[in-house]
Amino acid sequence: MIALIRDSLLPLAWRWFVIACMIFFVVNVLLIILSVLVSSFGTGWFTGWLPEQFTPKWYGAAWKEFQLQYVLLVTVQITLAVVAISLIVGVPAAYALARLQFRGKSLVMLMFLVPLLVPPITYGIPLATVLYQVGVGGTMWGVILANLVPSVPFAVLVMTPFIEQIDPRLESAARVFGASPLMTFWRILVPLLMPGILAAGILVLIRTVSMFELTFLTAGPDSQTLIVALYYSMFASGVRAQQSVDAMAVMYMLTTMTGLLIAFRFVDPSQLVGRVKSQKV
Amino acid sequence: MTSVVSSTSTASRAAKAESSAVAGRDLRLLMVVPGVVVIAGLFIYPFIYGFISSFNPQGENAGWLANYQRFFSEPRLYDTVRKTLWLAMPVTLLNVGLAVPFAFMLRTPSRGQRLLSTLLVIPMTLGTVLVAEGLMLYLAPNGWLNRTLLEFGILGSPLRLLNNYWGVALSLLITGFPFAFMMMLSYTTGIDPTLARAAATLGATPLAQFRRIYLPLLVPGLTITFCLTFVQAFAVFPSAVLLGAPAGATRVISIAAYEMAYEEYNWSMASTVAMVMGATQLIIVGFVLVLRQLSYRGPVVGGKG
Image (cartoon, rainbow over all chains, first blue to last red; front, side, top):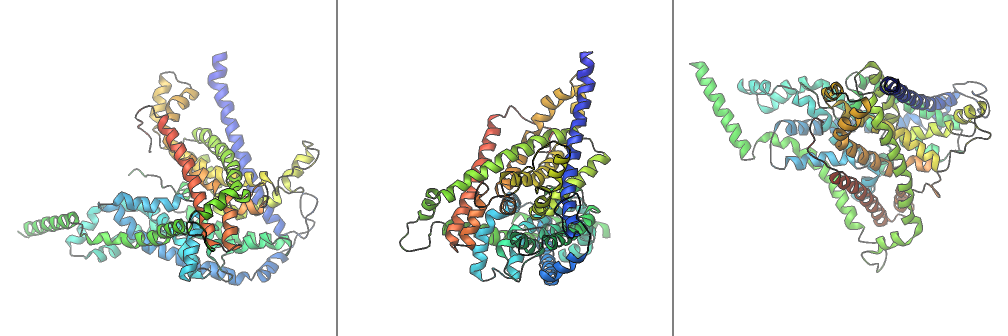
């Protein structure tokens, strides 16, 4: 009887306890997000489970008050520049690390790993100091340069397993038929790597849109991305209606969630943590 | 005949490629250069610059250690280290402590596992600022959490969870736990399940399997997860300002660094605070790694490492 309880009932109870905890956690997270969504559509919400009335007017208000068309334009420009540069710099670097053996390779790997592990706020202040000294601090280029620090290594990390999966004999075959290394890269590798490049690009895009610390430390008044504008409007809460801040938060949420949904078509969710699962071929 | 020619030419080509690679002149190696330049210029150089400038205080006839002397003599500066540790340590222990049994429980791939990881990625992707915005509404005295607790008669008066320690701790739990869980999940699924099955045929209960097989194999992953989760929590910034008491209980070290840079415009002092922040993280991580070395009991194989 005791053996029965120990061997089958206790593990079962434990299993259900864990599942219940997970559900509790996820439900709370969803409710937190839902709070923002509900509040952004409400007229006033002081008592009761829901706001008194629902209205879409805060979205228009937020759009005007925070000059969101400008903020969104800046966000798109910065994000696309970061994605493009990270891929142009990161894909070849990932190729070299996946294929070539050279002296100091482990040092180079370490160089690409450390920026992902150190929290941005730690290196962001010295980086902002340098960027301001060079004269790009507070401009869009400053924000782009700062965002490259975590993005380039991240692109390298995501791309490496994709490159390792490609048979090196394909490249040798191309070389045999007289293709130059550059041509091999463009005609053989890039098409085969497209899924990986898309995955890396979308992941870098999401990370850049949601990168608060580095953008916050390097942005000037006219180079703020959506997340930084959201922070400033929350920081100055009371100046403007809470609901228009919520509306802005919802717009930010939609931007990242769209990216996330697209990303899920290409990658395993655990890659978003920054650690690439080693794939068994 | 032609095939012989082509094969010899391939061989010579290969030999040539080999020799040039050995000589370190493989042109493909240039591909890594732009990436190295980006990291060297935007990560390593600023770090060295910040380190040196922290020893060059602003102001007349200040000694080279003046910034550090100031940091460790003003309570509103040195106390931030204690306050940040007081936030980051318990939350990290909780996050990792929960992540291990949960990841162990959900180690077998299933639809549920995939759905759960999808759902857990959401708070991480949204970032701390949005989670803070949500918590401001959710934890408010008239928010859904307090309302539920009051309606069900669990509480007499609403919990005060905003503008103090708890709001920040909860936000660190919400962004940190999914990270720790996902990392632990990828380590746990990397352990060969046949090991546990072999133990089961020899009569090991699930608890014994966990303690005797999984836990020892998970130690390397556990160490890394702990360090990364801790370092992230130690660098807490937006939620400490928005949900906490940035002048009081949650005046964390990143707030001090920010104030020095953007309110006092003392960049050299700001670098000093950043260096202290980095050093504290390094000390804790080093301590955890040493602890792991001391508990090392033999070669560990079977994990992904």
